[in-house]
Structures are given as structure tokens and as C-alpha cells.
Image 1 (cartoon, rainbow, N blue to C red):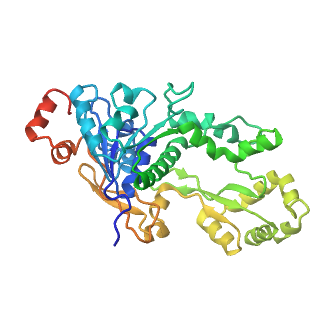
Image 2: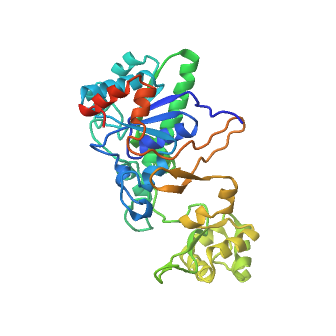
Image 3: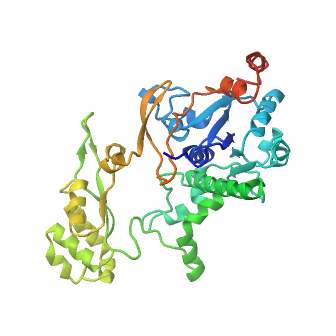
Length: 413
């Protein structure tokens, strides 16, 4: 069994909410020791978001926080207190990476801007994730991931034909920035190993999100036309979309759950396979649908015919029938179906971690496998301030009496 590639790397994690913690989650998954610097005066937003274990609110009970902070430790400092900042400086001196996702000027206000941090640890790799970066006219503005969805062009591309722009169902900019930042940290650590030089990484959520709308940007650049909103349709495939299936009775409450299947037909051979699966071979030679061009012209009618068929079956039944005919199709899975998926479970993707307050819970784990090194989830997410005394006395050289004094003066919480 190998060791994780970032074993021995320590991260001072000043980030909060989603983008920054998602970055440091990847580093923890790669074996880094990640120490979150938190405060009880203003807890991380995600500690206060549902779902909560057993539907009981608590700062340590949020499934959101506990998912994205696996493998980390937590200390609570008051950075508005000079001695709290001094503790942070000691931690930085013993760290390889510093991560934060505050707007320009916040870390400087604490006396922890990059130029000052370099004096503490000359070869530090510091990554700042902010809405608009640390320079430029918008840099002083606070921004969160959801605002980046329309700003990066997602909303202009999302929506049904003839309808208005729509919000995507997820704040893409946050985890996307976190992944970009983690990759940049790896590159900077590699550079440091070769040269001994640290580095400052200035990452903009806006810019990294805009990179995901490449097709829309290129279409406008090459044709001068803004891409039309198409719902679930595709310019090069027909039929292409999600189709309603037989509803699923809820086990509790007597309601029903909408069920859907995704179908994507890339060529005429797959179209004929779809016709066979539906038992409608005559449609394969119907002039309205015989070619891609004709299917696009009559796409509304085509969608209606397919929907009438799919609503007779479950998504799994439609998936099985179509895949047997070589047609790309798959169920739009619920969370329950994902958690029970035999393939994901066979690969060990889900992990069960015993949390000090909420007990054993299932978590989404590490989505990669390395042939020479072993990456594993080391521990559940921390309780707020769980490791304060442990880190201060074990790593930073404070005595237990020192910690008591720091707590009494309000520097440590």
C-alpha cells in the first residue's frame, strides 16, 4: 500500500462556504493535513445549512458541511484579537499552503496578506479564491458562486426555446473554482519542489466559470450570433433530451415522484434501434424522421411520440431496452438510487464515517484511484474547534496554561 501523494503537506485553511473548502477537500483527499481556521463568532455558512442529521439543527450536524470537510481538523481563533492573529502566524510558519476565499483586503486587514505571509514562511504557496480576483475594478466586490452563473453566461444559454434565461440548478462556479484552485496548488507545490520558490495564486471564480461556456463564446466569436436556448435539445443530435417515465409512488405520504430517462440519438443507426425498442419500426422510414435533418424539423412531434412510449415504463426498463439496441440512454437517478448503485458501491466510492456527534453516516468519497499511491478519507468532518488544544499544544508549542490564557482573553475560542 502506497502513501497519499501529499502526505507531509500542511494546509492552513482560512476558507469557508463552498469554493475554498472544496479546494482543500481535494488536498485532504490527496493526503494533506488540512487545518481549518474557524470562529464561533461567525460560523461557516455551511454549518448552518440543511440537511441536518435527524432533522435536528446544530453547528456540527449539517450534511453539507460534513460532506465537504472530510479529513480536516478545526481550530477556532478570533482574528480580530492580536493574540489570535499571532496563533495564526505560528500556524502559517509551519504550513506549506495557505488557502482563503475572502475578497481583496480582508487578509491584509488581519495582517496576513501575501507580502506579510512571505515574511513568515518565504516558500509558502498561498491561494486566494475570490469572485473577481485580487486586481481589477471589480476586485473589491464580494461575490458568491450563484451570482457567477449569469455573469459567466450560463443563464443566457440555459432555458427553453423561446423562453427567458434561467438559472442552473447548481452554483457551478463554487466547486469548479475549488477544483481549479486545487490543481493550481499542485502545480505550485511541484514548482516549489524543483526551485524552492513559493507562489501566490490569484483565482477568480468568474474567470474559471467563464471557461466552462467555451462553446457559447466560440459560437458568438465565429458567427456573431448568440447561441439560442434549446432546453435539453442538442444541435447535432435528435432525439436528445430527458423523457418522463412511469411515476414512482412515495413510500411515505402517498404522493408520487417524477421519474425521467435521458436519451441521446447520435446517428441513423441508433434511431433505428430506438424504433425497434419502441416496437415502432415504421417510424424508421417515416419521411418526418428518416434523416437527422428531418428529425430536427419535426422534433416536437418526435418528442411527443417518445414520451408516450417512455411513460409506460420505469427509467430502468427504458434504459435496458434502449441499451440492448445500442442507443445511449440512462435513468435520471435519484439520490437514493445513487447511494444504492451497485457500480459505485463496488468501486468503494461511498464511505461510512463515524462522526462524534451524528454517528455513522454515508459520504460521497474520493472519485479517483491512483495505481501507485493510496488515497483514502482519513476522518469525518471536524466539530467546530474540535482540534484547537491539540493543534496549539502539539504543533504550535503552546502549553495548556497558555491555551487557557488565550481562551480567557478571547483570542482562542
